[in-house]
Length: 402
Image (tube, rainbow, N blue to C red; front, side, top):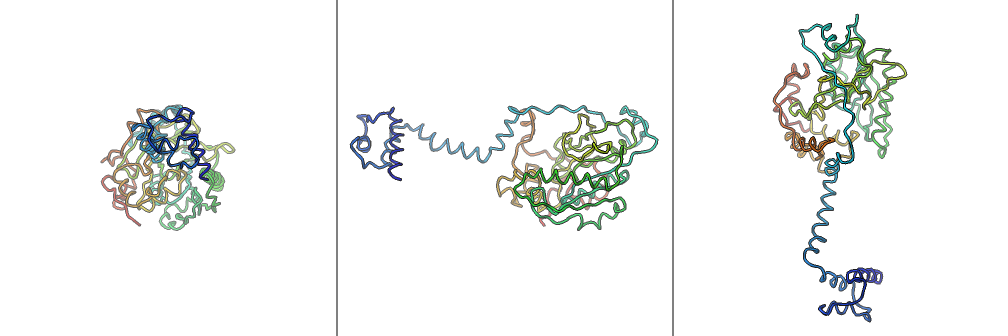
């Protein structure tokens, strides 16, 4: 082993000296010993010392300070660097065709439909609200109370496995008593998890969405019924759904632009949530999905409250369970004290930069989200029961620990 190391250092030394065994006359005794062609007992360390003596201070600093620092910095902040440089290799998606949204409680439905360029139906469409459920009990309660007046059938599917293959309790089943108000209109399904821990989590997510298609058929959905496709935390406003069920000639697939909130309705991020959608159901064509399915979007159609949980433990569970679990790059991200501090600061749980496509937007969104003190035009059930949902309102960032 020492023989091979000595040969390797010999080669490095030769390159440092221009490919020759020639030693400078100014070399000291150590270097002279190393450079003696007849010497076969010179140690590898002596050769390294010889090489280092031929390097100036700036080169040494670069080799032993700057290079390791850069490598460590890339390891720690590599994801941030990647996100910041995203505009260099990825172009923004095609912009949506934005439909202005008109609404006032004192304006008739006939006039509202007309303002949107649509006709009024003789009778409203049936409405189906279908969701995959994990553990968002509070947001599900707010969602279903918001949509209750206009939804014909609520459809919910849950599994005993997370998208990442972790076992989880059947949370909805355990809280079903508190959802008695929708029981006559509820189609509930449970699917056993496959527990493929090393599988891409989006595979499990897609699998569950396919099962939700079958559950919708079981619920009795028919052609031209209105189907809401969105996650539990993507809540369309009730007047939006009422508009779409009463107006004729609405687009077959219409995305819903929602206001983006993080942790609570105290931290308003932007108006760029677009994944929620409303479909005029068509047998053999409509499939449940959570990606872009059309180029048309209705403005100001509701709220997206991401990571809006009552307890710190629920934050940690979702961080480990949802499809983007790879963002948990370090164990410290799951520390309860850190999670609580991040919530009150309005910072990012995963210490990431914004997912934007231009440097201007990335720089503009860097840092914590500013606090908002407006609680105007939020879901009615939230405000009617503010004492129960205070953690979702401005000025109440502290969470329960359990």
